[in-house]
Amino acid sequence: MYGAPVDLSFKNICSLEGAWTEEPSRGLRPLKRNSEMKYSSCSLRLNNNNILDLHDLQKTVSYFLAEPSQLAWLDLSFNSISHIDKVLCELRELRVLYLHGNSIFILSEVDRLGALPHLHSITLHGNVIETNKAYRNRGISALPQLKTMDFSAVTQQERVMAELWHQSNSRIRSNKLLKS
Image (cartoon, rainbow, N blue to C red):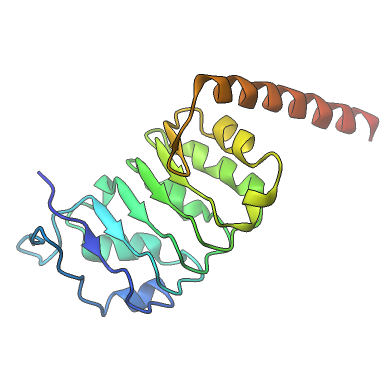
């Protein structure tokens, strides 16, 4: 049904709008286009560029893909992204999201991705948030449907630990609110 990934990696793209002038790299599998010259794919690679923010993500997905609402796999690794933008939550069919090797520094922004019902694989390693002790627990707690995080399987024991961490953190926050 869907062809090869639309590969815009290693194109020196600084803004997503800048991607619109690029021609996707040719891979082993040929890219198929429809009558509107959009690609029949559910995968988009924007890795290894210099992208700072995701402001034009929806426009970029719509520009390249014949069925943008069916985007299932998005690679934004090795860019200069510092925030997990809410625009990612609009990609309702997203199953795989690579964000490793960026500059994401606010761990709580991972919670936003909980709005993606089909997300089962995410990478966030190589970001500043990885240095936080609660990094993996927070990710697994926020995204309970995950099967893999940072290319490692999420185990049942990790799910239990993440749930305990979440309950403990919720109590601490509640107590702080009561005291203020």
